[in-house]
Image 1 (cartoon, rainbow, N blue to C red):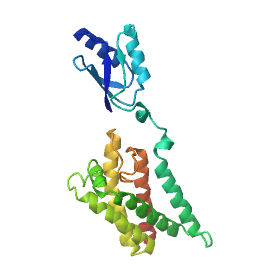
Image 2: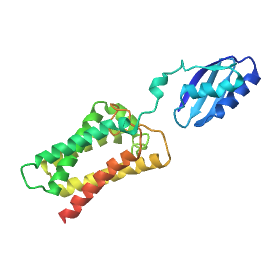
Image 3: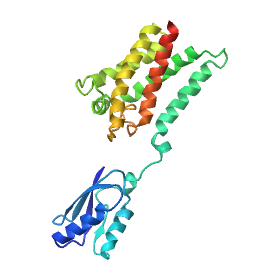
Image 4: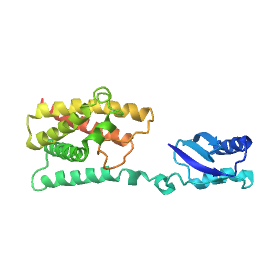
Length: 239
């Protein structure tokens, strides 16, 4: 992440160098550009660094320089806990688990039926959020998906494939075809996710469209991997 911070107290090129040197000593700061003419510093960070830490770094110059955060909201940038970040996905999975479990509450539990219902709920819910803003999803998806990078329209098509898979699982439409399609689509999807996560790219996950600002992470890998595992298991069971 990169932010601009107003700096006061600089009077010459030497001041620029001192401010830059002090800020570069802060843990988590990648690079610093200081501009005396604009009284501004551009700071690139590995993760959010609180303003108080930046102020403390400049205090070594006996209070000559001051840094503020007028260019952006400091509170917005404060890191959220893992639970708060992924709360939407956790709630969705909990609801689907409860719903699919209750469907078989009065009958003998059948694992294959439960997985079919779970995947129906997964694809229907996730396609719903993407349909709220198709264009935004397609733009986000094209940033990391291996097909969408080359064919922008795949982002739009993918949403309707998800929707169709949800309805197919719900109605038990040609199980072998449905599971095979899901296996192929989710395998393609996870390749782009793995590349992004392993390369440590800071990209917004497009799994829930633009409704929730979720970062790409191992949670996304688990999400896609679970669908691959379930569809693969049902294909194996079919034979």
